[in-house]
Image 1: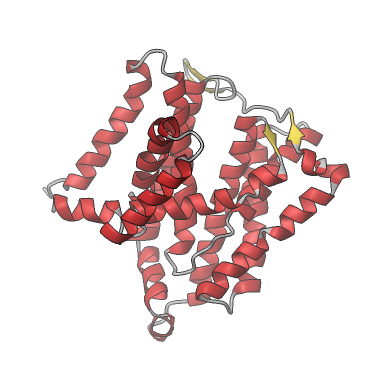
Image 2: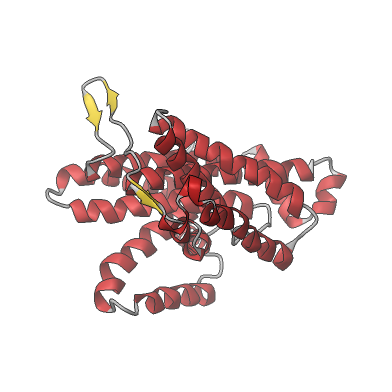
Length: 319
């Protein structure tokens, strides 16, 4: 029987600890909130990295996030559709924009592609900001219905009201995205993605459908990001254009993925579980008004000391 590798053992142990932790620590609602958001940002980072694995670095993924958030929020606001279905519709709207994005930006590569993705955020943001009769403009939407209770036998998760239940929801969201991200790194499709990233001409020569691979990556990445945005709208209960179309939400997945390691399937998760709690629990308490500087310093040090990310360094040490 093939022995279990140390990284797999560590991942399994960490997952078990995170699952048991809320029941062990009583009165830890604040920590549930922080770790739950760490899971959320890990899922968002993995969704972003699926496209980045093809060699196309996006700094405009907040377009998909905001579209997912507003689609789900508006559907819940104006119709009686279940919030769970609205979340899926949010992912679908982001996927449609992803297809349009791919068709428009297909000839671009490198820095030109990154700048174009950033510019593409302005299209949905300006529409949402100015269509006041539908979206309420810059005032945003409030009173967004919470997610309904989920029942599995005797287990009832009140994910719309209980922070511990939201913790488990976001943990399983991260786990589901982790399985998809694993396929994007290690499956046959993942090898095709890697070939496209390294040399498109050589990939086409050996029969890899480059355009189809890029289209699949951007649509999957967009839909997963849109689902994150839709969940965010229902968990927070309010959204506004400046919040869900912000540059911060575009930069966070990139930062977490680079810090954790873009080419390890667990890299974005590792980056999120280290950086976000450190920022909220340590940096913010040490320097309430300047904690962003420490956050940025961590990234600069990582780029110099661990250019392939913490995950790659850790994997090398375990070997």
